[in-house]
Image 1 (cartoon, helix red, strand yellow):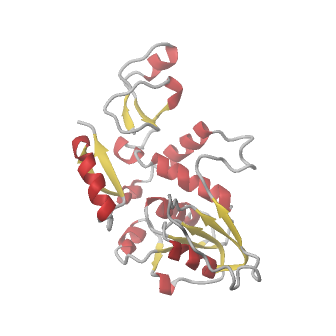
Image 2: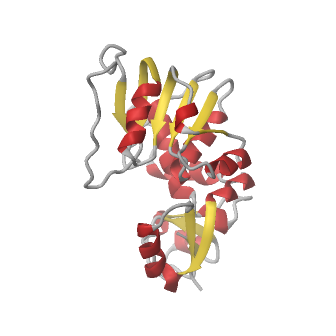
Length: 249
C-alpha cells in the first residue's frame, strides 16, 4: 500500500514523517510498522502508480530467474499485470523480440500502450529462446512448452492455489531438453542473493515505475468500503480487470 507517515519514534521514523511511502501490508486505513518496513517514493513516481510496486517486484524476480539476454526471442503468456510487466521489462533489452500472448483480444490495446506486441495464442511464434507463463491457466502452460525452442527455459510465474495443472510431457518435452522452472517472489535467485536483498529489489521496482505509460495497468479505483463487494465481483467475473486500486478516504 501507499500512504503518508503520520508519526513515529526514533530518528529514522522522524526523517520519514510526512513522506509518502510504499509498504507491503494488508489492507488497512492505518497501521504501525517498523521504519525499516517502508520506502519513500522516488521522484517522478506518483502514489497512484506506486501501488504497482509489488507486481513490479514479481516481474523483476521472474526476469532474474529467466535471465533474458540481448537478441532473445521471448514469449510471455498471460497479459495480466505481472505478465505484462515481465514483457515490458524484457522488451527493454536490446534486440529482443517479445510477444505478449493472451486469449483476450482487448489486451491488444494494453500491449500497444506499452509498446508491446500482442498475439492471440494461435498466432504466437514458436522456437522461443525463453518463455514466461503467467496466465494461471494450465492450457497456457501447455502452450509454453509448445513455444519453447530446443533446450529453452519456461519460467512458471502463475499461482494455482489448490488447482491441479496437467501437462502432456510425453511429446517433445524430453527430446528438446526443455527446462521448466518455478519463479516465486519470496526468494531471490541464488546468483543475485549475495548482493541483493528484498529492500534493494523493492527500491528498483519503485524506480522503474517512473514511466507514466504504466498507468495503463490500472483498470479501476474503488473506496476501501467497497472492497468486499469488489472482491466478490472479481471472483465471479474477472474479465477486463487488471490492477483495481483501493482508495482510503
